[in-house]
Structure formats: structure tokens, C-alpha cells
Amino acid sequence: MGCHKMLTEERKRAILDILQEKMSVSVGELSDLFNVSDVTIRKILNELDNYGFLKRTRGGAVSLATSIREFEEKEKEAKNTAEKKAIAKKAYEQIEDGETAFIDAGSTTLELIRFIKNGNKRNIVVITNAINLAVEMVDAEDIDLILIGGNVRHRILSCVGGLTERAIESLYFDKVFLGANCIDIEHGVTTPNTYEAQVKQQMLKSAKQKIVLADSSKFNETSLVKVCPIESIDLLITDWNIQTEYIKQIRELGVTVIVAEPGE
Image 1 (tube, rainbow, N blue to C red):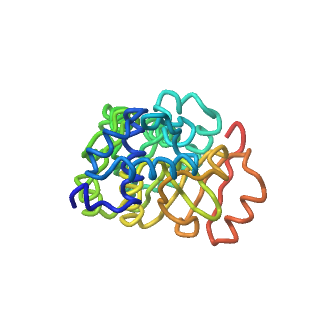
Image 2 (tube, helix red, strand yellow; image 1 turned 90 degrees about the vertical axis):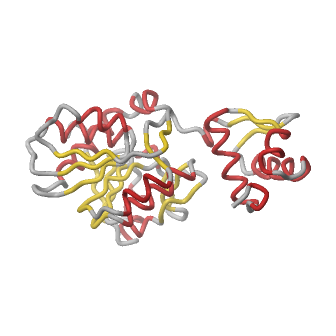
Image 3 (cartoon, helix red, strand yellow; image 1 turned 60 degrees about the horizontal axis):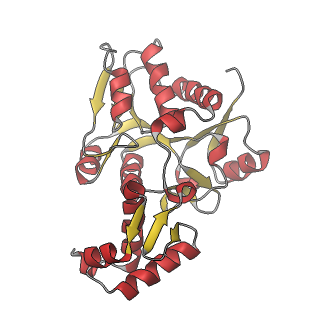
């Protein structure tokens, strides 16, 4: 599909993806890219500004870091570390001998990979699309490791795109441990990036059991692209800071919830 044939919604998502990488963009650049008028681009940018996804400038728009930019992995790793380690330990307990487990990109899943590397479960297969997770596991020669390639997102260190999706589609694994940017009762699991969302959706399709790892700071938040409704997952693992009301609402949707406690 040519850029001039893109739907308005697709243009919005493409603009936000561009802003994740460049942090600023001009009306002229976008009108040339999509082969549409400056008036059309200004209208789209104004709508995105109204929704709080970017900030309009005189000649274009700039990124709102809190709305559309995912933290770089080193930034993310430094936040809620104790909670993430506790969640990861509970997640490790879900892996059984002889199973295949897909580990999504993310800071909490990185902690899970470390538990897998240093734990006593060895008759398992680990699959990931995250370069840093694979590097963490590369010297654990007694665990089978499959790295799924594709287009590299440099800041997030994940592989996305058609190559990644087709590779995951060709597999069927026991469990997926999915990272989450945002979780909301009404809007489900969401992420800022279109390509990331599509890869996560394929992970869910290829998994027998769907497990989401999310620290309590991710709740009651919504990002741009929907990954899945909450009721489509099997198990949610979170930390002790989550509000009791959220746990109740999620369980009412038929999802099992495990709450990691401090010091676990």
C-alpha cells in the first residue's frame, strides 16, 4: 500500500512511530512522506495533540516523552527493581520441566531470564525476540535458546516486523511471558508502538498459556496501540503495590492473578 493510500488512522500511528525515533518532525516532512497536503497533516497533528500524544509546534510536532516514548532499557531497569525481581521469581515458578517458553522483551522479563539462567530448570527451551535477553542467556549452554530476528528497535533491543511475526507464527510454545507497557480494565494491554503490538499479538496466538508480567505502576494507564483485552490472557503476575480493586476486577474477567510479595 502506497503512502498516499494510507488511512488517517494508519498515518497517525506512523507519525507516532516516527516521533519515537526522531522526537520531532515537520509538517513538510510528513506531507512529502504521505503525499498529502500540509492542511491534512496539520489536521492530523492537531488531533493527536488534542489526545495528548504529541505537542504541536509552529512548524510540526515534538514527542511527549510521557505519552509515546518508551523508556530505554537502562532507564526501565532502574525503576521498581524490587517489584520486578519478585514478579520474575513468581514467573519462573510457572515454568515446568520440559516446556518451551517465549520470553518477551522488557525489563521485568530480563529479570525472568536471569532466574532461568541461574535456576535449576534445564530441560526447557527458551525463545525470545530480545537481543539483550539472548545475550544474557548465551553462556548458559545447557539451556536451548532460540533468538527470533527481524528489524531491530535499537532503544528497546527487540526485533519486530514481518520477519519476526512469520518466525513466531511458525512456532507453538507452552507459555509466553509477555511484558506490558500499560494495562487498563477497559482498554486492556496497550503499547506505544504499532510494530511491537503486532509482534506481541503473534506471541499470544502461538502460546498455549498466555502470561502477562506487569508491575503495579503499569495499571490504570493506556497507550496508543491495543495488544489484547485483559480477558484474553490466562495469568497476570504483578506486585504487592497493586490496588485490591484492580485485582478483583481482573479476576472477575476470568483471569488468574498472582501477587508477588516483598522479599520473595
